[in-house]
Amino acid sequence: MMDKNLCTFCNLIQGAAEVSVCHEDSDAIAFMDIQPVNNGHVLVVPREHYESLLEVPEDLGIHLFRVTMQLSNAVRRVSGCEDLNIVVSSGEAAGQDEPHFHVHIIPRRANDGFDIPLPFNGSAMPDRTVLDAYAARIIAALRDPMKVDSRPRDGTDRRSVASMERSVALPTYKESDRMKPGRSRPPAPGTARRSPSSARASVINTREGAHGELLPESSSNDERG
Image 1 (cartoon, rainbow, N blue to C red):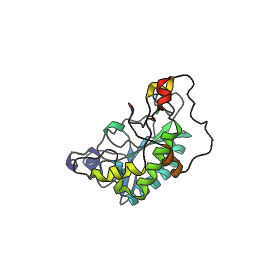
Image 2 (cartoon, rainbow, N blue to C red):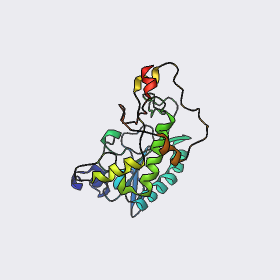
Image 3 (cartoon, one colour):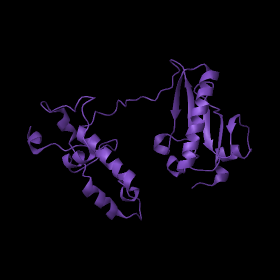
Image 4 (cartoon, one colour):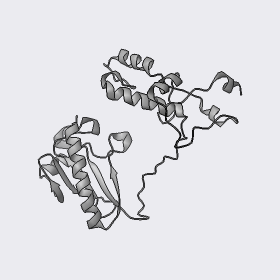
């Protein structure tokens, strides 16, 4: 964890620089962003230093979101913007620019030039087995978080990961196979979901794609074309 004395937000909270506060309580503070997308752009910040979402205690996270909801209604009225983005960037790869967890409340106007493009155009629609496999793994992680870590760090027990992989196998595929004529498309939105047990029964080994996604393996018949 970084030195709190080097944290911009910690310094602001301690009064070491000018800040325009719009909410404060014993656990949270909210102030105006000095580089706003639109006027009314607010940051909601825990008083105690936590670098990422994963470090924030659950009860504090609930409190921060409650504050965010209350402020969002006020920001909407004051800014005159009916539309909002609530943005959390947790970690460098996600675009976090300050090493102190915070929530953005961003009032939005048409053609304001800011964008968070979703759905993500850089990703193809996964096969249903991929979605089922991730759903099954997430359920397993909720039930026993200590057993699920798809990217173990040094010093972690990799045997627990192997145990999880056996219980929830993951699908793979070769990206080129999805382009071959005659391959079935993923089920249309609104089709019936399969249960986690059926998902586990229908998937096989795994590899990752360019964006870290799980890729379903084609059958040997498909590979022969």
